[in-house]
Image 1 (cartoon, rainbow, N blue to C red):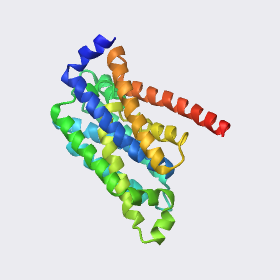
Image 2: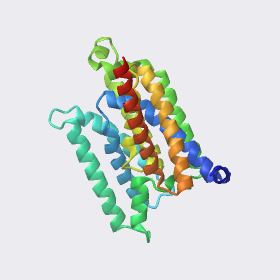
Image 3: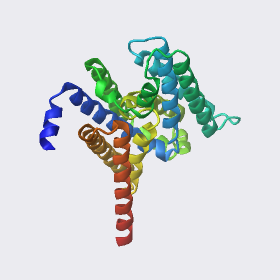
Image 4: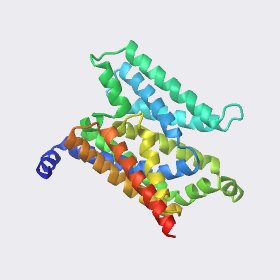
Length: 280
């Protein structure tokens, strides 16, 4: 098995997949803790469906690089979702449900009406579950993912204290002069960027698992925000690497394998947390 792994690691497409997988897992885990604590966990799922709809439009338009359409559309919907969720007439969960279901149905309808592929079901499966797309990345896509991931990490580090304040007590943050509205907007934009990047890794239906599982695993063991964030980042990267390597060696779908590894580690962390509390 080790010889087989070394053999596969010689190929550039495998190296690209590992690099992108680690970067996306790192970015997803950083904001995942904030989303879980602010009870915005489902926003990742809603935006992923929006990204699927935008990707369907890009394929109909025969765009060579769908990122130029998918990214701005997803960011725009993240902003609209944040604004609509604050409306008394349309609550946050209802707004997410409308966007996610509508975008998913619209995207699948477009792919059926204007399909140019002989394997429509395969294309849809790859987009929804990320079955092979991570193994077909070009060098340009890897560079783009690296740059965007670096921007996300830098923004999170620079605004760590403000994000921490808005996450735990938004009312107090506003009272102390922190423009919570703008930082919520910043969080929404960053999540939209992460969602678009993660579609190639786990597909649009499994993105929320990549964001939520590491955060919940860390919260089962640690209590402080910094400890949870650091552990979630390390665990997310580890699960992504293990999932990718297992998928490459066993020939299983990449996205499903990574999420399965994340779920397994969540079970281990939850058990470890219970044992720790029992001992205490």
